[in-house]
Length: 290
Image (cartoon, rainbow, N blue to C red; front, side, top):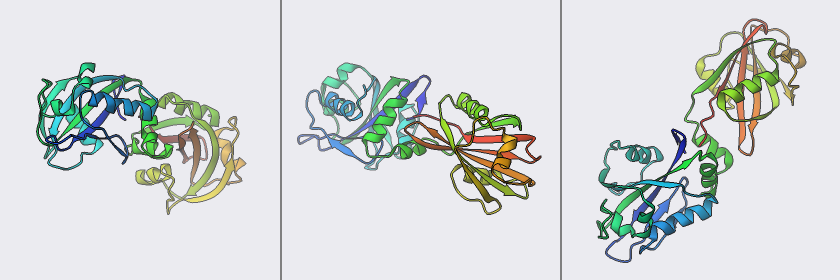
């Protein structure tokens, strides 16, 4: 999940079905899985209990509840975040907003479905967005993402949003270990490795789109992979990596390093030199967390 200031925002979407009959809120978190909770006194609290059980983490402080009419369609995570932030979403009508309080969890879904916490009923059908805030909630959001059937790497990729990038300008004397440490400081997340370094060569400056392809692990037609070294020595200077790879000088030399975010997956960093290793521009995607 995206972080709001120093807090992580969790949005739980509940669809209230058939309030004239025994209502059945259907809750969904990140992923495709859904759980049904029979309505009645304490139904919102039971819903959060199931989330806590699934994630193994507390759900934090309830900030607000929004009663909305979506016109029968499902909302994306981004649309839910916009609504919680007080923004408009096309085709969605906000019926009411209720300030968060743990006592709300003791009422019924039907009570909240009209956007007023008063012990009454709501519309025959409706949707509720529960916005909860957790201090430094990276671990919660990762666990919740996993609980709903995604792999660690899918959870990581779902929050990258295509950038932004961290770019470092360093000298050829900068070691592999120092480059790693610089990326860790910039991203505020520890990484392991690099587990490997691939060397590519070309005859000109790669376009920005080519760099993005490399960071996504894709090939670029104008660049040729000529060497791979497993577990490069952290003490190697960037200027010497090509020599250790057995690569002679070319106009454009690129080293593609593979690091690992513990338990999550790999992250790639690209270092490019146009002056025979005297200076390097190193780029990686910024770690956004959850």
